[in-house]
Length: 216
Image (tube, rainbow, N blue to C red; front, side, top):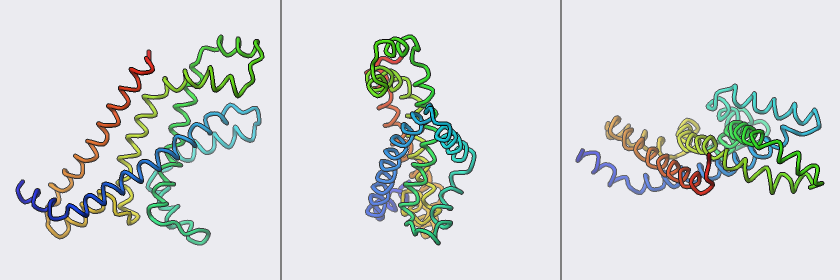
């Protein structure tokens, strides 16, 4: 234990930068996934058949193929067209991947809204956009919090895959330090504890949101 503490203290600058990088990648990926996921969920009910086909294909592809493979495609496979840094590939990869899951969470929440309220708003002549903003979305949002929160936690944990594409996040730094100190298991457990703390904070935030919106 003393050796682990000493190693962490000696490499504290590297760990601080790694945690910062992990948080930045997580936040940007989460924002991208939330925005794109909501857009896809709304487009999924579009009256235009081609749009619905696109959303179904998007969801099927990103849910049906490995996340690591998607990251490698963005980082290596697109080299002939566009050169993304490891960080950019990680953010776009996580955002695109988890948008598929978040869109399904939003879609299920939207579909769970009482259709009687929707029909009544249509009968009253409330415009489609206003109907969605004032009636459907507030109710759907509260019901989507639990599954969306799970995806947010998954995004944070999945930033560890950045180590495969040379992103110097938490897992990458721990692996590099372990290679020179031979404290493989202690350092891996130390990194795991940080991910655990971040996930626990998200869960605490989820519970606060659930109480605020009185989810039933």
